[in-house]
Amino acid sequence: MSLVEALREAVGADHVLVDADVRRSFETDWTGRFTGSARAVVRPASTAEVAAVVRACGAHEVAVQVQGGNTGLVGGSVPGGGEVLLSLTRLNSLGDVDRAAAQVSAGAGVTLAALTAHARAASLDVGVDLAARDSATVGGLVATNAGGVRVLRYGSMREQVVGAEAVLADGSVVSRLGGLAKDNTGYDLVSLLCGSEGTLGVITALRLRLVPLLRARSVALLALPDVATVVAALPALRERLPDLSAAELLFADGLDLVRRHAALPAPFADEHSCFLLLECAARTDPTDELVEAVAAVDGVLDATVAGDAPGQRALWAYREKHTEAISALGVPVKLDVSVPVAALAELVEELPAAVASVAAAARVVLFGHVNEGNLHVNVLDAGPAGEQVTEAVLRLVAGLGGSISSEHGVGRSKVAWLGLSRSEAELAAMRAIKRALDPHGRLNPGVVLPVPVA
Ligand code: FAD
Ligand code: MLT
Ligand code: ZN
Picture 1 (cartoon, rainbow, N blue to C red):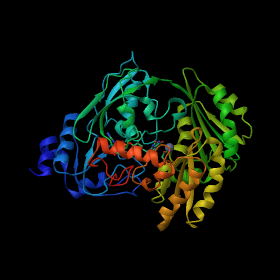
Picture 2 (picture 1 turned 135 degrees about the vertical axis):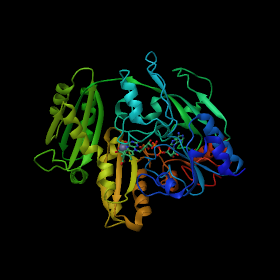
Picture 3 (picture 1 turned 120 degrees about the vertical axis):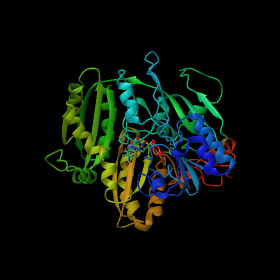
Picture 4 (picture 1 turned 90 degrees about the vertical axis):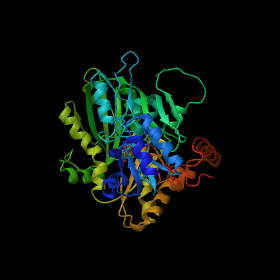
């Protein structure tokens, strides 16, 4: 039996896509920077079908490329070439919300937006939120240990996971969906799958914790002279605002880009170089406490506070539309780094020169999640110097004690620089884990670790 016949037997002929035109949207990533050809795109509808696909690929010694919503930004969601692309979007079942435990089970293909709507219908909420919510799947969010705009309050995706079910490289199924908050029975495979980027197992379902739904929100946009002033304001803001959920950093050039892209008005009468967006969420309107806290921040040049939903959306748009506004201008070198918060001002200071030293004509657009020291470094017009730009930026970050990947993952784009954030001993341990769980290196070859995994 041929591979395609075996795949059709596993999931049904309608869900095995071999036509090149039909495969295309699965084979190119969201940035347009990474693309690769798959033998076939396969869309199973259950864990059993996923296991059958993985076994069929194993029997034919063919690698598997795992894909969720394909919103990843590091090239890890698309094939390197010749894999069977396993799309999980049909695993979209949502269990009843367990209000007693404040938990829910969800298929790996459920989008963040669908999960959030489901939780809110039960007067609960999801701790993670990000602009790709309409397409990003819970399986992808866990596989990348995504962060987003609420890490300050609820942590990254790993902190939302209380159980998982996955198909391993040999086609066996591991399942821990009971949702026990305390369960000390050996190695935490579920946590190991978080952030594994599809290289250790195919996540098919998750048990997720839910957080209280705080309907009352308030958002402020502050204009400040520089990053040092923003960083200096954080401790007092966190102390004064127990309801603080988000603290986002943006700059004048990114704001101009977004305004032009989305036809938005200027937030302030005067021009300013640096901005901090804050969101508070509570049971009762937090606007007064937010206004007081903002008034107490040293160095504020201007500020606007929105207590109404349309006003809040308008302020969030200045931040949330950065990714699409940048991509509308071309394919950027997208780097997602973190440094100790105290080193953020120095990083922002030194970045332009570091990039200019290898790509004089390049344009650097910065924004990010300031509370985590997480900066998104987008470099447009790097031309043929993309690798040199990546090298220069990631070496600068490593020199400041930072990480080459804050929330997007390593994917295919940063494999060559993993040694800047991981010691040889750590890399050896990671290779050993990979070899133990995927001895033939069939799951997402070339993602996180180079091939072969020696
Ligand atoms: P995909 O892109 O399909 O895959 C991502 C990786 O996970 C790949 O390596 C893939 O093989 C693996 N994978 C996917 N599903 C599974 C599964 N079921 N089992 C095992 N492995 C799997 N990320 C952030 O962290 N914070 C942000 O604020 C943020 N904002 C974004 C805004 C925009 C506009 C866009 C386009 C992206 C943003 N992202 C952000 C990146 C992206 O949304 C996340 O990385 C997300 O977690 C990817 O989910 P996905 O379902 O699209 O996964
Ligand atoms: C964001 O914070 O908007 C995302 O991580 C996406 C990006 O970096 O472009
Ligand atoms: Zn981000």
